Length: 484
Image 1 (spheres, rainbow, N blue to C red):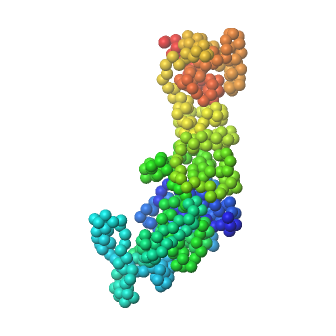
Image 2: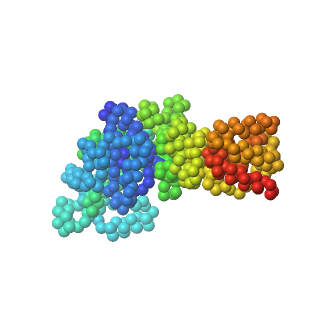
Image 3: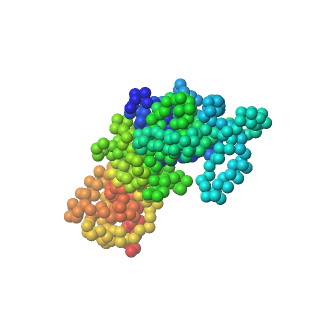
């Protein structure tokens, strides 16, 4: 791959960052950086009807969060700007008129009414809707007269009527299309705005893009792009068309269908770096068995030829596994920082968050696992005294009442309130009573949480919840057992 590789990620600001779109951004970034090249961000906003307020900020924030920083773009500039397509309008019509002059494009004056009637007629005949090239061979006099009358027009690409257009794709190999199958596509609309297909080609050339990474839905348009490159006498880029991301074997992953966007996954408690790692493997296979990659390791290992031709099926189980690895690899301080907002979403009382996090960390796969496990801290749930029965610890409701009274006596007189001291004093008492630690301490966890499974044992819960709340819940639990 050339050392001078220049790639571009060119999203439209139409809403949240779709998973497939972010994967394209990643593959585009890696293609540039593996070759020590330049990664460009270009905002393609010519379709104003689909523009969503704030969507450009979503693009910026998503790329920054995932580490896909750009070398040239709307916010930082560069030698090939502007990098927002709507700010480049002066370029496009000039280039379209150059094609008209060279005989590769033409003015089309067909009205909407004529086109609608044509398409209705074609549908009635069972034909695929297409333009019939009605204006393709107008005389210079007719064109001049229509322009002088101010009749609205579009500029259409004049496709060859015979022969074959071919191109090579890095993933799909050699592809050929018969020119007679290509419609005379619109390049400039009646409002003077370029179509996506035309602006795309002109901008890629002007920005000296060497490698175009995009979804394989654009394979069918690539012959049209190449005919434009040929008409201008421009060098063509290397094409890398990626397979789609699928929900299952039959349905594409789509935000429109309620499937997760990048923002949705972050809101569900997935880590940004884990999502990026998962997307790397969603249609690409590394050499060897490695699955966990830092961004630097991705850049080093990247080979676009290892992208699969087959659609990639989104696997939430694999994503959760990768996320769990990333969470486990967080330092204790990093986990506290990540987990605290999730803890505070359900816990307002004063607790030892660091101790709570030490217990949550090994048990957490996704940050959204946290809230439902700790709601008991603020509000004690209703529970049945049968929870105190544990065959392994040999506890019953009756033995639990004895154990809790013993623990209450220990804790009431305890001045140094920390988990090590609490455990040490309880273990001493268990030894004096000639019982196992579990027999004495298992009921404490139930009494403080009302749950059979908690983030930490009873002594940890007592330490993190504080003396006042611990004794209050112990008293309630003892009363519950005495009145049973």
